[in-house]
Length: 91
Image 1 (tube, rainbow, N blue to C red):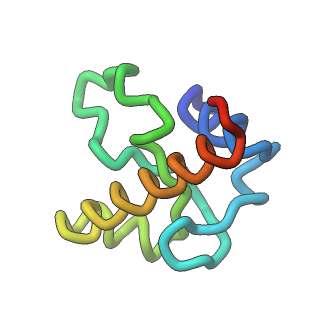
Image 2 (image 1 turned 120 degrees about the horizontal axis):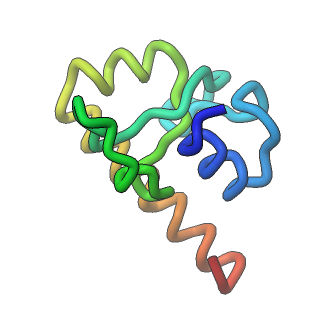
C-alpha cells in the first residue's frame, strides 16, 4: 500500500480503498488522488491529508483533465478535513 493511501485511510478509519466512497460524487472510490500532483520527482511532501482525496475512476479522470474540477476537489477535501477537526476537536 502506498504511504499516501495509508495516510488517507488511517485518518478516516478505513482499512482499504474498497471501503471509501468518492469524495466528489459519492460512488465507490477506486483510488486516492493527489490534488496537487507529486510531479516527476515523486515528492513525498505532498502526501498530506489536505492534498489527498478518494475518487472514483470517472472523477479521477476529470481531476486529471480539468483544472477547474481539481480545484473543486481541493475545496471539497478542505471542507472534509475541517469537519473532521471540528468533530474530533483534535487531529
